[in-house]
Length: 321
Image (cartoon, rainbow, N blue to C red; front, top):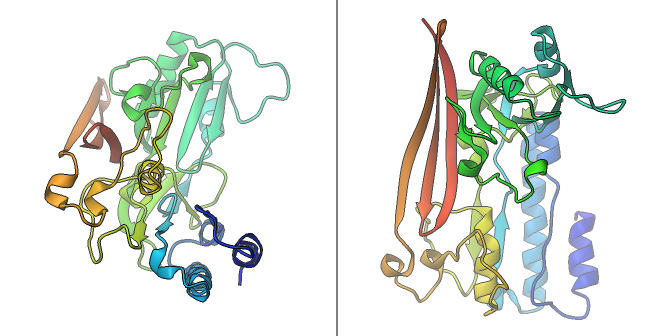
């Protein structure tokens, strides 16, 4: 048994069950980063997670609490296999930019800090020079690794941070540019679909995430217990932001302020799913920019359920003339 399991069931549950327990398991995330989805080590890590879940359920059975406990099993993201590792700092510096992944001295105006996140990169331009930001974006748009670009200020051929709900209330804390790497639905050598370009932190053939690939964005959630319908697949758009409001509703607690997510009414027992949930809609937005050498085009599929927004997937490509 994982030591985190033992801490939960043997220590925190020793004197009774609390109203809410959260168990975080670091696998199969780490193993899939070090290998790839579908590898024998990754499958073994998934099996270990299954065994840890079984141990938690057995502990509930021992306390005669299984039938009165709601259980959420959720992943925080999906996973992809790296097709190419992109040394973006070198590529930008070779193109005449001053790109950094860390500052060894006081940052200077015009330098670009790259914050890599596996399948995406955040760009912070020191001084926020508008011409430099435009030159950076146009360079990315004509590359062969860019998927989707978001910018703090509206620019031709991009989406804004606001459209992706990345507009922090503090303007100085927002990146000037965010780029998601390009992806495709090819399979890796173990038959698992989802290949991506990714940042410099891991090599080709390893696993990572944080692109706008459907294989990264579409994670899983299983909800089981007395408050949920049995044997139902929820076809509405959902996300991890829906967990907190749903749990609060089960606990008959009112959130202190407006939350980003929604209550998953369509999955709740004793409610008519046809009338319980708000209306859903989906759309795909596009942005393009023409260059002398070709055309940049990016797209983003967005779902809305009531007032809650979900990003489903996005990608882009530069088509030479």
